Amino acid sequence: MSGADYARRRGVKVGKNCDIHSFKWGSEPFLIEIGDNVVISYNVMMVTHDESTALVKDQKGRRFHIAPIKIGNNVFIGAGCIILPGVVIGNNVVIGAGSVVTKSIPDNMVVAGNPAKFIRSFEDFHQNTLTLSSDVSLKKTSHRDWAISVAVNQPRPSINKDADK
Image 1 (cartoon, rainbow, N blue to C red):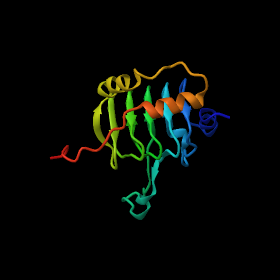
Image 2 (cartoon, rainbow, N blue to C red):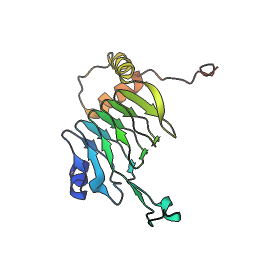
Image 3 (tube, helix red, strand yellow):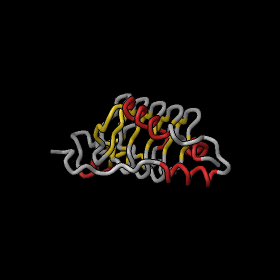
Image 4 (cartoon, rainbow, N blue to C red):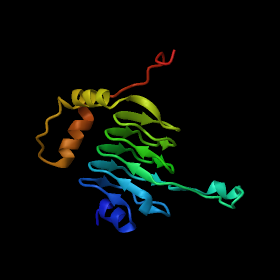
């Protein structure tokens, strides 16, 4: 069973052409909606409720914060991300691995971090990705050989110690 099929069986609304590798849908999977062409990597957690509010009550005795999560079209969510209640993720969004998404993300953004913050526009990401992959042949004899070729020939970015000065 595919990850998308599993999500649907749990009650998640899943669009077309989704590649889902996570199985952590929380206690209210029916509150999660995923658009088309979405990739959700490994160990991504969707949290639709915040039970820390059980420690306090308002005058009517309410104490739970429960809110839906909505993910737009053409979205990539990296490994180990946490998406918190009420977050809406726009279209054409990339979320870096390990990010904690505490607020909604507008269309056409790349975000990363804890909490997730703007890194660059989706257009910049798109152009940079096309440049990196333009030298890699799409012809392959086997997936293994192709993957090794891509991994060996990709430039490796390094941290610039003067970037934040």
